[in-house]
Amino acid sequence: MSLLQAATDVRLRAYAPYSRFLVGAALRSTSGAVYVGCNVENVAYPEGTCAEAGAIAAMIAGGDTRIAEVFVIADSPDPVPPCGGCRQKIAEFADAGVKVTLCTTDGTQRTLTVGELLPGVFTAAHMDRA
Image (cartoon, rainbow, N blue to C red; front, top):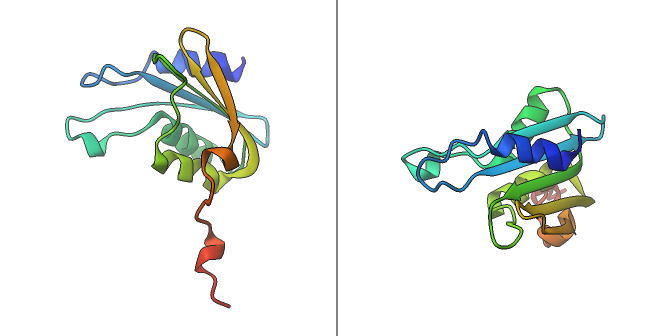
């Protein structure tokens, strides 16, 4: 199954009764395994979970730790980018050159690298004082 199809399928399982904005994400780890996630809302909005975060959590639970490629799909006029928090989460597990493809349900796609999505990323190196 393609990452686009996996993201499209999982998007339909999103729990978004408040915004009705369904998002699906699929990623391929460097081992070749595919992991998916969808947004899960909560009436207390900050307590919800983004699709990208769900896919990353599934990857970690599956025993992988490195992302090779990411797809995100939503029913939006333009390809919807991950929020700032998810950009940082993706950057935690992906090299700067990893492709992130953003898709609409109408078929429009935009592909960026993790480095383009999050320039000036905060890394563990920022905490090193030695």
